[in-house]
Length: 546
Image (cartoon, rainbow, N blue to C red):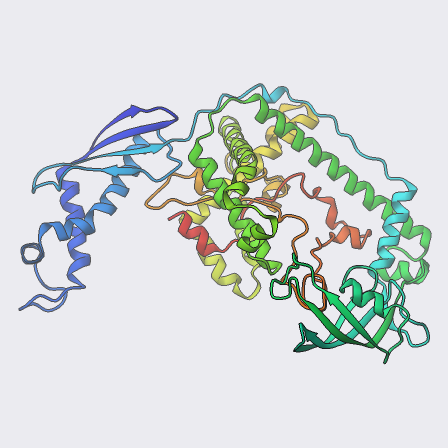
């Protein structure tokens, strides 16, 4: 096989390949064996017609159509490797003619290659560990959160409804004079915007069994377009009233939430230690993020436009999935915001370019420092990812163990370990300690590799870092859903049925339970997780990396 490379502007190359006649004939022969099993020719049983007969009756062009894609894919991968080229997109392949018997096959492939990164003096980066002190007020707040997390809702029959109480109501009525289906057993907490303002106003002072007549003028911009601009009359009946009962901070609570505490003083001490560990972990995460940002800022690289566009596609897919979990489609969200899709892409482009540059810089550092995940780290990461799918874990594990997906996991862990290397280097100032933390070859297990806690922002998925093959793919990347998104509107509620569907972010275990160390590994947002998240379907990843 002969190859020749011509460099083009903007990081593109033209690779000219000439495949030897024996390889061409071998590809045609393989195409014949695939084709002969699917066609029936007169006088021959299926699968038994000789190649000469198949070629004469169907034409050499028919065989060539089945042979050319595998031939190009195999020869392109081999030629790119020989020339030291690493494509970041599928090549645009062009050839002039089908080769005659005994002739070579010549084609040219134009594609973008991974750009060269000029690293700064990242080994000189030093970042102080700035651990925030844990104050008595912090401990008091954590204990208050702990009590709130163990609060119970108990029926209230003697007092009228006031803000902070939970109400359960049945709603019947009409909209623009037409009856609407009733909503029964809808609950919400007064004063928290769970219900329409008019309903909350009517329920204040009510007792179980009381009914109130309510008129609602739905705003023109109501999230339920079927109600927008209309008016309704409703009968709201208070079925049940509950009051929050918060446990006392005493020895009983201490023993309930902590095996090592039997008094309030012991519980305070344990909470203080946990908060200190969380603060230390956050300080390390912040130092890692700062060191990574400095390394990226000091590096020089021309980020290919195709990688930015692919990152944007991935970010939008992630955003769409997050919106759908809240009951909102991306088109509906854009309509609510009064924006077009291209406006959103333009807003996200800067983040996408920064994420791609971060990946390229960390990849270059990993190459220079020989940072690689071990086979055991890759195996554990696959197990962790598969376990998130519950009953489907076995099927997901098999998908993740495909070569293309293993390559993605390896690439993600590689970037995570490079980020960990930078963090340890910036904190310790000792290159040897950092090298051990980053790992070399098959050694060096790190918390980052095990949990993905140190992965750089936007590093999820490795399709963009692997050689592009027959089809182009996109890396899954993190994108937070915009604040203020709500579910589908309803007649009685502000944004979703009689109940208001409030978009809230779950607080971590450490926030709900200060005695837990669940939050001590990393600060949310400081270092995005590596690898596929539970919403990343392995099928999509396999297709993206085919």
